[in-house]
Image (cartoon, rainbow, N blue to C red; front, side):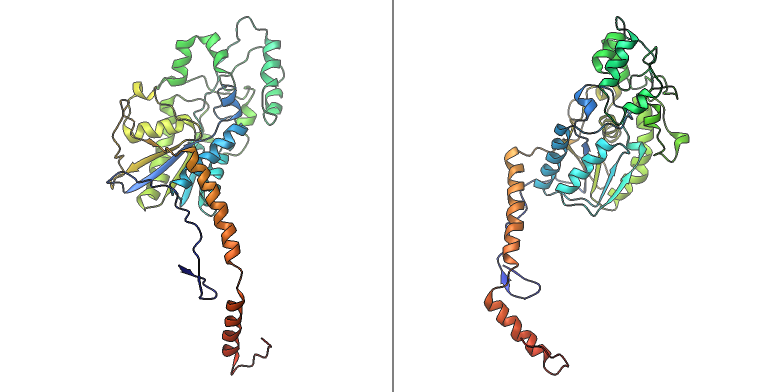
Length: 355
């Protein structure tokens, strides 16, 4: 039984909102949660998004909420959150924070957590006229990107890996070369320049330190700009015992896993982070991962919560607040007792009221 703070009368306890018996491995001193953003509009079309600020699909928004519900079911809460400057990651972070009731925590946004920058790769697809390719390409762009892409008119050469579908890139480069661009650790694409169709969209004034921003990155370069943020911003908070959420992008999270686990370049090619799936890292007192590595050297743990448990979270939360409203009403007996208490307290004072 718990007591109502205002009336000091025992009332029934609302249903428990601890949902599952999730336990961290023995020796865990800190747990950090990574979440890749939900499916974006260009994920759905299998296009290279990079730094283009595309939004989540309906499926992606659902994935973000489900990731939050899984964390909620496992009893996770957070003290601060870190995310990129791109809306697909930011909205995913908001969804997780909302479901876990962490609306009050501090949020840190940084371009260093942006997706890998795919830069510019000048090419024209064979057997497709530039006019046909231009119309098809721009017709499929989100409405918030089209004005930037159209501002340069119809290009004679489509000069971007950013925005192209995997199939279009495979036709031009071949599967092996495309694999090098996507997964090669040291392969850097051509830099995005001001004549790129999406340059004005990507570099729209939101970034303060534009002098050090990338214009095209290899995966190794992406790791190089993520590590300082990890060491300078995230690790100090973890070391202080804060519960940290990081909502970011596939390649950024792959880089962080590589850094934490010491995954080599060959095995890193095989690592893919699913959209919307919470990824847990259990760390010891020295901030080293303690889970046993798999065949790739990966020590992260994806949070496995059943759909039934997620639905239970929703049902119990609804019941909690409904019963809480019912318990907030004062019975006649409690009201009479409270009137007597207030009347006794008013004796000997200048208060003059009729109870």
